[in-house]
Image 1 (tube, rainbow, N blue to C red):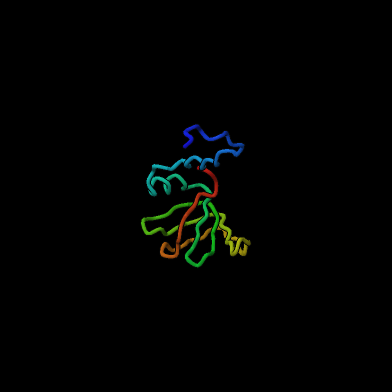
Image 2 (tube, rainbow, N blue to C red; image 1 turned 90 degrees about the horizontal axis):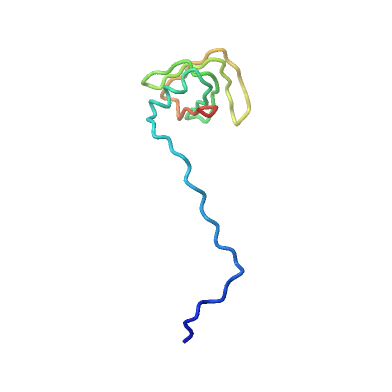
Length: 99
């Protein structure tokens, strides 16, 4: 039995996984307070997106947007000055720009 090390290989080592992405340690409440007055994307349970300036929201996730655009399948279908969205229709709120 030969105990010598194997001959060097011309194969490159397997690729390393990417480093983990930074995670935010703030609470959802901190996020929502941070995006008031900024552009957001609101996705409804129906799949329709509303994009605009988050004017205010309450504990029920009722939302008031200004300069609002309605997007269906990525296409702008309507523009509104102000829009009020009832919270039970909201799937999520996302910052439209990095915060």
